[in-house]
Length: 144
Ligand SMILES: [Fe+2]
View 1 (cartoon, rainbow, N blue to C red):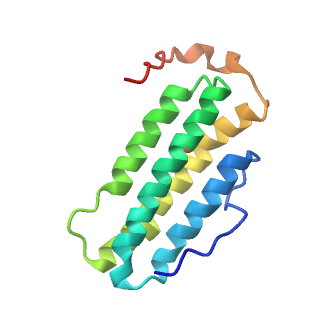
View 2 (view 1 turned 120 degrees about the horizontal axis):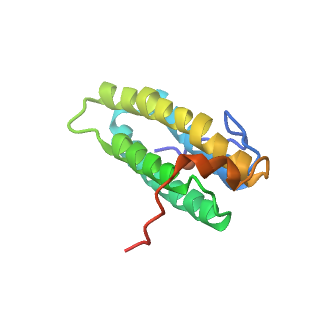
C-alpha cells in the first residue's frame, strides 16, 4: 500500500502543535480510503485505528501536563471514538470504505470541533479552570 500523502495543516487548525500535526496525519490517512484498492482497505483501517490510539495517548498526556479540568470527559470520548472506529465486523470493501471515509471521518471531525477545540483553547490560555467549576466533574481515577 502506498503511504498516505502527508499534509502539514489539518482541516481545523487548533493552534496546538501536537494536536494539529497529529490531526493532519490522521485526516490524510482517512482520505486514502477514497482511493485505496479494496484489498488495501483492511490494512488502512488498522493503521488509522492504531494512529488514533497513539494520538489519543499523546493528547491525553498533553492534557495531564496542563491539568486540563475536562480530562475525564475528553478521555471518555476518546474511548468511545476508538471503540466505534474499531467496530467493523465482516464488512464488504465498499462498506469498509464508507466506514473509514464517512463514519470515522465524521467522528474525528466532530471530536476536533468540540472537545479538542475547547481543550486547545484552555492550553492556549484563553480561559482558566474556573470555567469548569460548575460541572462537578468526577476526579480522574488513577491508572491501574
Ligand atoms: Fe481529543
